[in-house]
Image 1: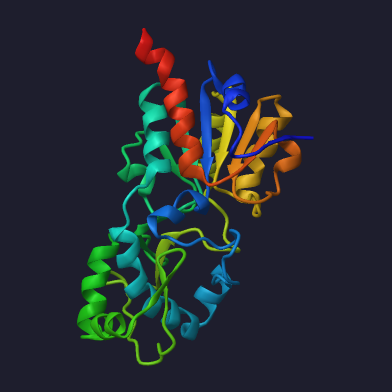
Image 2: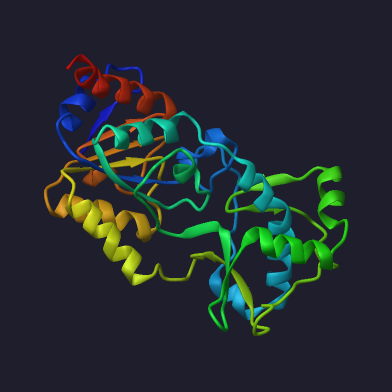
Length: 285
């Protein structure tokens, strides 16, 4: 049974558990909401139905809808900037306290914040893969091709106002006229280099994440409800090997019963205070 700490309580218990330990970190969508990127399952989030891998590869109408929405939404994600939570975690890494970070997010905000060792578990929004020849291209390159095939589409959508959704998506009702493009090299189907629901994370990426957890003394989970197994498995692994697990998240998570300590709070404030407290002994030396 985990111990729950109120966000307004002092940081003594967190410091007691984490000070002197090398930390592996696992982050989810809750770490990026303060950067303007909504999440799927946080308190107050509207119901959302993310596209599955089977829908994307099996139905051209789903692909058309996805690329039309992504043609607008990826720009919002590309323009997002790290918030205090990302900066605090990067600072902990620079101090040698965080040994590496596993993120379920595709927004690259940890990399933008200056993290050196990041495992993008589900890929990133910034690359596109051909399912035929495996060629990788940048999302900007694809944007130029889609703009040429759909002149004015992005400008008209932005002018009418759009709601940004998770995973480089945007809420657009009329997508029926949008023209898709195929791989310029082989004519194959293009797909974001992102792990969709119903798709497996590459085995080498999972192995690297387990190695990161194994090489640390404790696991810190930030901003994840741990609803899907791709993240929960690392909490289970840490707990099985008697490593402390600390979870900072708004609302309950699927891993609470395995955690040593849970903090029901937003990420930024808690991490900033924790980082300052952990840095104090270093600064005093």
